[in-house]
Image 1 (tube, rainbow, N blue to C red):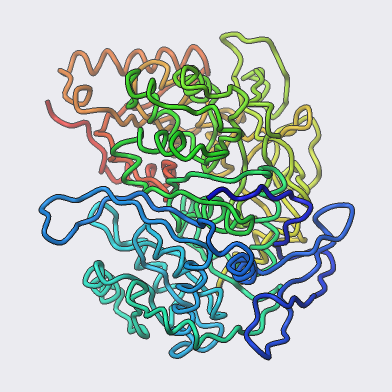
Image 2: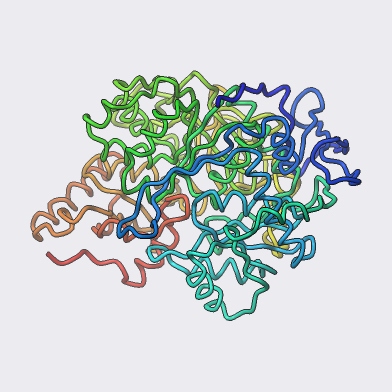
Length: 612
């Protein structure tokens, strides 16, 4: 059943720790009998005129009444079926009425055991139960802590750190992973409240649910950051933040009927792009798991083709993964002609990766204008800037030496230039400044720290007042990212903490890594380690098995090519080149290599080239 497209002007939903005024408005839809509490509010910071927004739970309730039989989400997975030895591919679809009923059943269970404002950890697999668990928290008025079910391939260190920090009063999971969840909880050394199995919540319990009071500044959930530069911290996302973020996404991607995503649901990009935004717009969202995508990237593209998706989302590495792993025969079976927006975010966007993806799937009807590079972060409830639909990925060449000195100088393509991709213009209500991080003064025409303000800017971190005061000073979010504005677009060049300073000039790891990856098919990271008198450059390269077992002379030749190329293009001497097996370097939840942790592990002697 197709869903009529909804325009950004008529859809009601919202976000943000608003810097402007907020007023509540009541709605006849979405409340329990006799409950007169407001189901929405008005925000005056999303555009020239005030915008009426709904709480996400009330929007889903309204759609359950207005279009209850329309599909809300489809999960493409592979599960164990009783009586079969192998896992079987499955397709599960829930309508808006079914999603609402399941969410209310979960909420009723929560209301019976957890007072309002309690933290509830979501430790569900990547399936329909994750969505209903998260919505159940919103329906019940408890604070969701989106995490993930313990898995063999994923370290439990971060999971246990977040559990200790958030101290949840209850845990939501599913019966198939109950033993793994219990083991993870026991490993924290703390006691937790009840463990509720979302998949076993009886639907008749939905009748016991009662809508709790809601206010724009209520904390809806804690979005734990990926920890790329430090210990994970729980970003306090309010009901207003969530509603505004959904509105901002719709303003750029509507009208649309169907979207597809494989991005982890506990990550801010997955939660906003694959749960909050499509549900707030009455769309049909098709999910497949991150591991399913990594093992068979063709499944993502096939879902886009089969469901005639309007838009999708991926980090940059997802593009490269498809180009490497999807052959011409599989590509020939696809029809990507309906895809209007391919949002790319979560990590730096590389022009070469976008161009290679567009070229690889042009025969499948992919519009070269579909790529939409974006910039965002958890502290801004995801979105800060997006490339306007229909323009494609815009890239420009800049003088590399000028950038290292902090100046923005556009130049023609050449060996001394660096090609950067524009991340677009600010979404509605967002202001972006480029400042000198030392003085806070604006730096037009120069590289500086990116600072952000707007209704989607959150107000800080959970139980971390010092970090909150440092990052959210003066009403602006200090992103910790270097960048600049050019021709209206935002260009991001790196993290402040990762910049390698040699003889007073800033060298950005992303630029060096692109140079290294032009020499060999590797995933590279460049880090600076303390030296005398300046930082020493170390290059770590993840490679497939065939490269890691090269004979010593061949490995030495590769290292020398890397040194010569980096020296020629960047004027830097490489202190050390280390080749490790793919999957060795630590990454964040969005797939970004953690340079700070790489630096510490290198200095501790943990990285060594594998023996042949």
